[in-house]
Length: 318
Length: 259
Image (cartoon, rainbow over all chains, first blue to last red; front, side):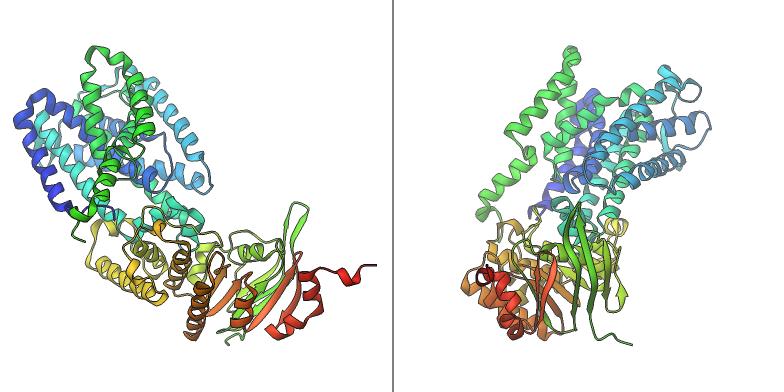
């Protein structure tokens, strides 16, 4: 099973912790945690793709960028409402993912990883050079606060709650996805493609769907990011973001549903506490990534789950 | 018009580079029968299964299933038409329970997609319940009812074979193609497998098995096709095949013909 019997309690504790955090953490810590929520949103989708369907993408930083730029450009240049811009940004990024994924996901092998890596490099380069549209290296300043029906999320704390609301909704939806007809097909094809196909699973279709969904999550996070910082810049979404996302999955526990959440929160704090050592962040993420692969191959959550199972007779009702 | 043959293969050919793995093989089964496919190692039995189920494309010939031409159809589409297979090598779905694995086999019985899974509407819940009941029934039928919550990859080999059959059964197939279902089983397990296959036939399903265990094949099959070096060597009832001199030669070698 994908979760322990105390799932409801764990979720309740999570929600309580998220709600209470700003009251104890202070403004700066709340900003860090909001960033953690943004990373978690991307990681939740990426985990469904990588951890369950077994396909690797190195382009999710680019889908974040697409979401952020689309929101930024539509709200600043074209004066769209933030909500309409966000819907267009996520739908548009999903469409881009479909165009990229549909041909590549038909073939076996690691083509998706290579093509998405190339795609991401192109997106980032274009975003910093196409000055008329993206503002080039200056980026897009003055992105308005996010608002829904006149209610403005005009403080970092309000944005924190919005971001974590989205994070928790997507987190809970991931349980539904994994435990469904679609989710079982996904897990089966991730475990063994031919065996899944032999039971009637349309492998290509499932893979395209989950790739598009994960890209939509990334774009949604990017769009929220733009409104959170009131600013968009392509350098926010370079390859190091993708490396950090992979580290989140591996450290948190790839193919576990709590993994992306735990990994994202851990990694933003590591990143934040580097302070003046920030220039070594790549090195430190590399060490974390390698260390997790060597010593905690199931990630933090996978390891804890396995320990709980080991002593399961007492912990589980039966 | 209902065709009298459920599977009708004519002149099936498959080449790998210069090697002809299947050379104009004919094969047919009427509904409700158990057909055996035997032959020495390398005779092309597994290749035949792979082309029949769409895992490999063929180079020539025609496959008809219940009168419909299957050539070019993807494996998953053939499952929808009622043709399901198992593999000689077991491929348990890591990370899934036995029950969940069998529920994968319910895939073609429903239509809930990614978005409806997220919304989990009443119709989706009802479908899940149907899947669960069908999977539990299939597990009980093959004798794995008590293992439903075990991790799929923790089952011993004998149970893995039964799990494969349960997965196939819930697709509600008209024909099941079993690739060496008895391989790795002991005599007791093989005897129980024979009973199980006969019980499946009694439900009106058709079975085709590739098998090395001759006593099993001779015991349960209504008809046997012998392949050798990619060609059909013989075809007929177990008694006819057993007495066929070409079959004896293929299996025992051609010592008496040596000059």
